[in-house]
Image (cartoon, rainbow, N blue to C red):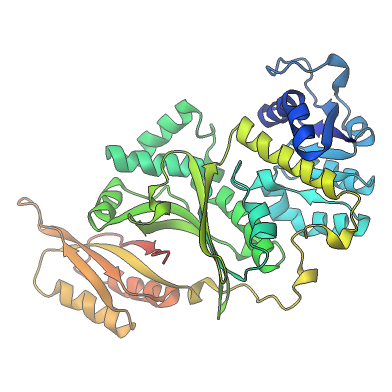
Length: 433
């Protein structure tokens, strides 16, 4: 039976989960796959803290170079984009395969890392970097290899999905629910990367690179988080038959490859709209398989550890195969004619608008005229009844598909109307047909 030596750098929550999985399930894995994973070294600056895993003391070291030297595959679980990059490049230089869950590092420096790996003839596997236990990377590389993928849309951040689900169920404010998410461990003490959409953007960039053969380039992703969302918009969306989700969306279009992360109204009849709590889900559309949904836990030591071990097994199986026959890493070499990234202003979408206005005759006509001048047609409209003590009301509009640049121009014009009494709220609508 083939034995593969595994070294782990980073013994935090995920590192402990990977170590436990290998120690506990190596025999089961061996019987299923013919590959025996042997844990040889675990490197971390802190090797005295109890991680809740019964690891033999002699496997622990504070020297990452030892873990690299004594392993066939190096698992990087340090996190961040500085020292982790150094460890990965050192492992590649030493001719070692790499497994990582570090989506930020790959999204920022993936081109350099993948290029170095290709030059050395080693693999960099990163299933755990995107959507935790969901095998979406494997699905795109292998299960859907016979498809021309046209779009990917996903809920790929469990923290945001928990917050939005709870806001909808309870009617509570964003700030209030965020505090609960932190108390329950769904959100970090500093949740900025999650709630501002950066974490989702990192994952989306990697999925787009695999699906469309483009280089990783975070400057091409349009990113909006959920911090500005109000409970009333979640309520109004529900009344209209939609639920608001933070989506990562990439599409192959006539005007280029879209890359965008933002809150979106999703019809309640769609499966994606019914993904609740901290769960993740990704919808992939291909020309042959049509639409497929992948659902599961997107974070946590055990789901992430499961994905890391799956990558270890895949690498072990293909390590002796010719480089040209292995699953391809994101790189433009296999798709030199890939489309360029789309300008966000060219994005075609339909929209939800909430417009606070004076409750006066003619206001709606002014708004309709501005929309018409910008070639935007109205799908449906609701005007909320003004309270007796107030002379203001809110107009809720859903538009048909139009260009982002056109709707933004219309909003700038409407915002200047004397009868508009506050900031106009814009949310995009994704039918996911």
